[in-house]
Structure formats: structure tokens, C-alpha cells
Image (tube, helix red, strand yellow):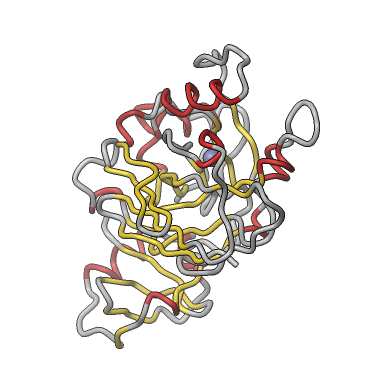
Length: 274
Ligand code: ZN
């Protein structure tokens, strides 16, 4: 099933390059029927027009649940343990937190920094397409509507202000969840388990990895979560960030910075910091 679904000023559109096809409905309603999305994509005909990236909102504006996997790339575990030595290793059970959905914004939205310790985390985001409960890994990809880029912006000071750390608040400030530019069905990328992922700040390459280095790949994450709770269409899974975050170098985001996030086959997002 193929489609690229985006959000143009609150309305679902199919997006191919700059060309768009208006669907006349809310993006969440569009996502609730992926078979229909596929049918519309296959028969899309002449586009309704062209749009600029600045018009795009979050492809999934109101998910019921947003999960974040922490410490899912080995080089990120190692760099965090250098800054704050705790002997971290790949944990037996996954480290999972919530990003509250109110933090989600579009692919070119400004990131509103608070304090001196805000940081970037470029991540692959998997979007659930069908209600899912207790699937095994072999079935898991069939439950994924698509993939997109996400920034798990993190206020490190807030995140570590309490003990144990409160990831969920530190990663949920207003505008701390840029996603986009479009939700891309998994068949439209060459290998959904092996995509180049990178992040630049002001043109300076900070993160550069491949999603094949995910210690818990997408299918395992979906299977694990679905063993505990029911996943709903539109639920997001931020899959973790590779090494190279600012926190590991003591360098944080500042107003005027531009964060460029890129994943092979999914496009790029440019988010200015204010
Ligand atoms: Zn993260």
C-alpha cells in the first residue's frame, strides 16, 4: 500500500514532491482508513496545486498515544554515560516514555526554547495504521501505516530536575515535537529497517547514522508495546536517537539556530529555534 500523507493547514493532503491532492478531511480521519488512502493515491490524477514546506502542519496532529524509546542506539548510550557515568548498558527491558501529544508541531515550525539546556534528537517515527493488540514481530510491520521524521526536542535541565528523571515532561514542552514532512508508507522506501538518518545544526553535521543500528528495531517495538496495551491508528513511536546529541558535548540549542533533520526516503525538516 502506497501513499504520502501530509497536513496542509489542518486538511489531509496527498503529497508528491511539491504537488498536492486535497482530501477534504481531517488528517486523523484520513489515517483511520489506510486502504482508502492507498486507493486515493493510486488514482490521484492531476494535482490540485503545489505547496511550500511552510504550509505543512504535523502529518498526525492528534494521536491518542505518543511513545518514545530511550537509549536505542549504542553510540548514544555510550555518549550519555560519558557525561553522566552510571555504567549504562543495553537494558533488558526497553526504556519507554511518553511525549504528550500537545508538543507536536509541523516540519518547519519554530522550536520555542526554554532555558539554556534544550537539545535536539533526530529520530525515525513509526505511525500505527490499524488497531493493534498482542502482535508478534512478524506481523508488526503490517500494523505500521508509515514512517516520518521526528525531533524529540529535550529540555535536559527539566528532564533531570527530579530523580528518577522525568523524561515525559522534559520532552513535552510546547513545540518540542516537530514531525513530518509527510507520513510515507513503508513500501515507498527501499528498506524501512535501514535508512540513513542525520541532523545538522546551522549546517554543522551533528548526528549521522543508519536506522539499521537501532538495537530494538521497529517491529520489536510495536510487538512489545502491543503486548502491554492497545495501539490505535495514528499512535506514534519515536524510535530513539543516534549518538551526537548536544548534551554529550555540553553544547545546547540557542535562539537563531536552525535544526535540519533528514531521513533517507522521508525528506527533511528545517526547524528554526526561537
Ligand atoms: Zn529521543
